[in-house]
Image (cartoon, rainbow, N blue to C red; front, side, top):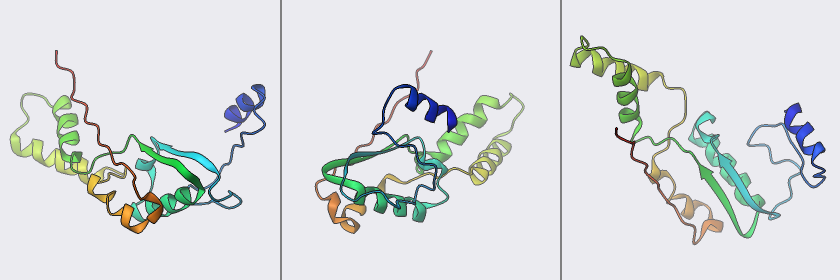
Amino acid sequence: MQSIDRQLSDRSLPQVKLLNRLATDFTDIPPARFDAVILNSIVQYFPNADYLIEVLEGAIACVAPGGVVFLGDLRSLPLLTAFHAWAQFAQADASLTQIEFRQRVDRARFADPELAIDPGFFPPCAIDFPKLNGCKFASLAVEPKTK
């Protein structure tokens, strides 16, 4: 945090404030003031979906009319097994049986500490949060490159 703070002061950006706090702590952050709230490559470290909802409530309250709340680099719950299967396959040797492979995938998936979200989680949020009226939910799938 000190490094980021130093970089901000070196660039003379007095309008930028660096806050070190929980993602759910919106104390002293004015409502409807910001054009965008960006949560990129962070949601997977949230402890659960309830925490995510609490963060979304605060973020939505901070965004001015016409602003955006952007969530990027989310881990997909429906693709989690495929992700762990790929990771285990990449590490497997030829002697690994199919049963052992499935057990490894299941263990890795069970032990995965990061939050994964089902894309179906988001459309109901538009009902729960009226400010999301007219929001867009996009999904981008990137296929791995093949040699």
